[in-house]
Image 1 (spheres, rainbow, N blue to C red):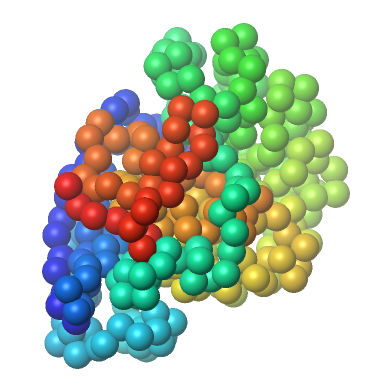
Image 2: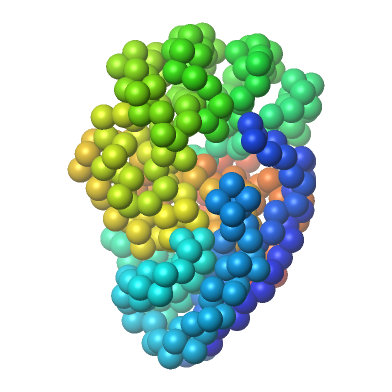
Length: 336
């Protein structure tokens, strides 16, 4: 295979804020793997919380370039196992794994969801994320992007007040993501009020290691609780059983589509709801997530919708949150 690496700086349409950071630009690594006239694309974004930069990922990958280029893409899972054996970060592995799966599908001439024997006639619709801001600016974002389902980022001293005000301007379903900012007592207090305001579930309200707090929530919360920061890799799925109602899988965190498929299977065995989320990424990463949606209960794949300008073609998301799957095989991605 031929390997190509390129850094992109993605500009967001609006400043994006969560409980621990704000940003207007997102660095992203795009990988291309080419074989027999076909090219597969993968993506992984930088992330200060996990101490990952595009430069650190490129350095990891360049160190084994010759070994990667010696591969012939016949089985993405075997390629993923090879990458794991080399000790790469999951973010770097994700970019390579997404490219490998896209290439594999293109070589086979079928979209990934077909190769995985799933039916895309029904699927959950993605939310659109509203970052922390003044109520006025959050309302402005909602008015500029009318959507049937919003994820609201919280983690302030006026969270219920914010949702109360936002509800006056939309009848959409709300999801709440506090990014570890609450205590168990706050979550138990807020949940009944938020449920009355049309909130569907709470995503990672407490710190990742607060298992005692999550035990209280699963026993007493008025709303379901979904793990995000508490569910990073495959081994975490088992640990979430009994503490969460479901899990949110991030491809960059777990290492790509290959482990995500195994995580979905294990979550089903444990009777956990399954969501796949995204980073602020382009249509390259979002199109990979789209191949999984027939298998999911919930999905957050609005990353490319948050950008001022995209860098690729692939899956398209309509204003009603329905999906137009690309005609091209694999993940269906091509760079602009």
